[in-house]
Image (tube, rainbow, N blue to C red; front, side, top):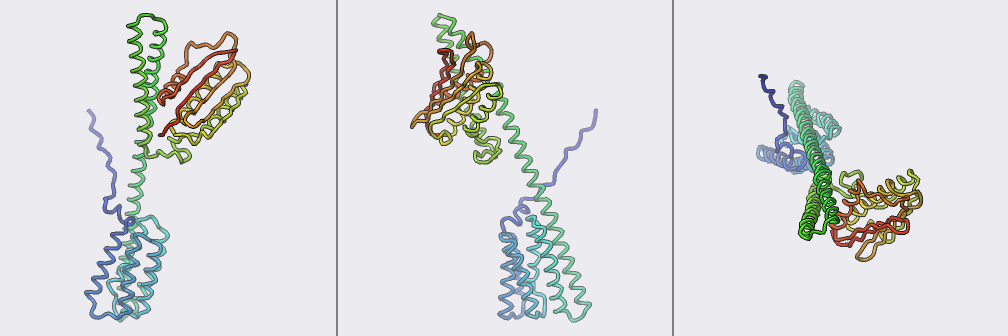
Length: 384
């Protein structure tokens, strides 16, 4: 018996740390607290000093929302403190660490590094200005430099944790999306396929029998099967729309609704490779139709042209799409080989297309006349 392998644990960023640098509230609160401590602890403040310290706190606190403007403004306010010839280091000057941490947490490494160097030069000049001896100035610079290094290191560590947390979340969402699409494919390829096959077999049995009770039972099976397929497609549609990556306007989206024109052009090239001259005439704006109608038309084009590749005799193949105010009509024609069209084995693709058409309240019929195979679909044009 082998020992159980301990589960791997990942370091997750605390929620309050993940907010840092994005909402801007922590930076503003810290800046206000340091300003309040400076005002309360000071003996006497001149109006220029009050204005500069308030400006410094406001700019440093704003780096959570506007990092570049706040960081540059903080440096200018620190330069103003040096220009005022301070006699002591005000508590408000400690707000210089806020832009360093905030920029690092946001992943703005260049801004963080540039500000660290700039602020350190200004704080060193201020330390020399307020110190009574070189030793005191050196000690003050070392302490403030150590704090600067700590702020820089903390921002770097938090930034890495935020990046790792965001990456883990992206991987989790991608995994869920992959599982969801896999389930959708399995449902369509197994349940829908099997149900459609049963419907087709029931329809074949219905044509061979004259028993009214058996016909009634077969009608019930066929109606139930079609209703099940429609319900399944409705669930798949809900699954598709609940996908976080669902976006019909994003190129390459896994759920992107393809253009009917693109589908026709792709199938034209496919038929040309098999020696079939395919022509299409579209009357009306197919791309402006409701999404469900466009998807059904695209599916119908694919299935009809696939049957042309399998069964059509060499010669012209045609598609005519006519979009009226309340109805779309699509007619496919192609020459049939000698002996007619074989209906044994297959046909499930067109049956699936017929189920889609009927689910939208339309009709699909196939006939053979004068040596031509004619597939005609009528779809009502309704809302989504």
